[in-house]
Structure formats: C-alpha cells, structure tokens
Length: 262
Picture: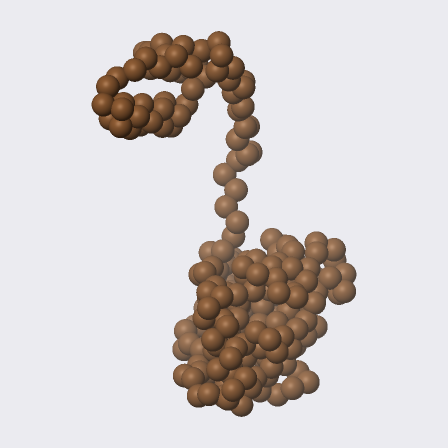
C-alpha cells in the first residue's frame, strides 16, 4: 500500500476540517469508476462441491440480463447464470458496494485472510455512511471482526476518531495501514478475493538463516581482510568495502599512509 500522509499534512487536515474550511473532497461512496464483481453466495445453493460459483470469487460479467447475470469465475473458469443481488461491486480491492455486516464477516473468514485483513462497506444503520471492518485475530469467531463507523463532516472530510480527519477513504486506509491510532490492529491486506491475483505466493520452504561466527578482531590481520577473495571468509564484501573506504579517507586526511593492524 502507499505511504500514509505526513504528520504535518494530517495536522493541517484536521485543523482545516474542524474550522469548517472548504477543501476538495472526493466522493465518500465511490472514488473510482473501475471495479470488480465478487460473488457473495454459493450458486446453485447446496453442497459447495456442486456449486458452479462460490462465495468470494471474482466474476467476469458476460451478459447483464436484468436480475440475472451470466458470469464466469476468474478463479475456476466456471460459467453460470446467477441473481445479480448475489454479487457486490468492489473498488480498490477493499471498498464494497452492497455488503451487509454479516456478509463482511463471512468474507473476512475466507482462506488467506488473517489479522489485519479489512474491507470498507456501506453502513446498514446509517445510509450514506461507511464502515471499516477489520479482522483482528485468526479465530473463527464473529467477535474477532471489529467494525468502525466512518463519520463525515459537513465539508466532506472523513474520520473514525474526531482528532484525525481525512479528505477521502484512500487517505484514511493509507494512514491506518501505518499507524494504529486506536484501531484493534494495523490494516494489512484487503479482504482476499479468489481469482483477483492477490494470492500469497509461496515458492517453497523458507531459506535457512546462516550465521557466521563472531569475529575476534584481535586475532585478525590485514591479510584476512584484503587478501584473495575466499568463499569461507569471515568478513563480508560489504564490510571489506567499508573498511577500504575508511582507510582511504583517513589516509587522505593525514596526508600519508599508515599501516592497518587491527
């Protein structure tokens, strides 16, 4: 994710908002015309193994025929007709249109999601407002998802805590991705969507960390540092270059060379 706003900018933003000064504000609901479509239910309903479309899959809309859409799953390639209200539009990978609180929790419990996974959705209880839903632990418990209402000032600026305001949702998400500032945890990856190319890449076991023995500088001489390169050398190339640079600078300052002993 992009870096959050600086402290100076956040401070001035807060001050301007509290004073009611007019600032350019983007739409609270949708900030972009680009979106993806995500399935909210298994279809046909029944055993998951028999479903052509499963919850949490990215869908390509092949034809829009009123209340029924013909779609293809980006995750499996399966095609099916499904009710249009079985889907939601997603902007920026994290901003959902037409998503309930209960469905948000279900999506955040999908595989690959972990503590910090999040999404922004329209508030059910406050029309026109948004809520931030964050998974705060790996437990499969509804209580492990925390919901925060995103309030809006008269000038269009947004906030969760009145002391921190933001011109748009992206700025809010960027900030809480770097600083908790009262949230249950830092925002991590957006809620996982199957077939959206945001699958964690695992290429094999983690490499073993190889730690070289601690150097005893008293037992070392210059030949061990500046001698012929050796794969088994206890001194890294970076350290060798640093020492060479130091010698060059000190010799230049003193106007004469000197012997390096330890």
